[in-house]
Length: 224
Image 1: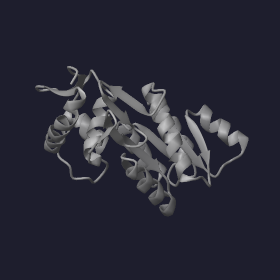
Image 2: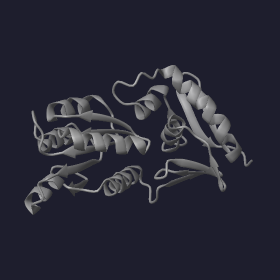
Image 3: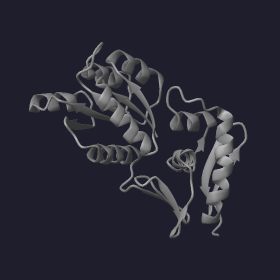
């Protein structure tokens, strides 16, 4: 999943970006509100972690502008403003959750997972297709009790396809979901990851079908 972290404190931002990337997400970072506003207008993020006390443009204004453009992207607000009125104002402006500073990173990760589940209409951190079980929280996949050996890029491709199972996903959509700003990964690399992934998950009764000229389709195949 592709996330945007909007935080002006370098130490906090570094910790957030590292933690979320270690969870398998592609993460972009904006250090001020104006940059965040431009990014949200340009890129289709799966979730935003947004500080309110930002230079250039207040985080509340960033949130209002995103919602005014029709964005339904989940937003987790981080702020030192812990007064009830501030929390209410953030939620009324369109925030989906609220985490006051200081916070523990494991709690933030749990809230991110919960918001992503809600966005996809999932009740758990697991996706099940055929005999393939995908643990979104653990960033792993299983065939029965056996764990499938996947690189983080391969898991990123699998997660993107699995969340859209039964629908065609273009190479460009896969690339956007698995890479952040400045990552030099071309569309052709997607073909390589899909080829490797296809061989690893087919024994679990799941196929990645190539739809020529359009992209890829993850579907349940014949029982293995």
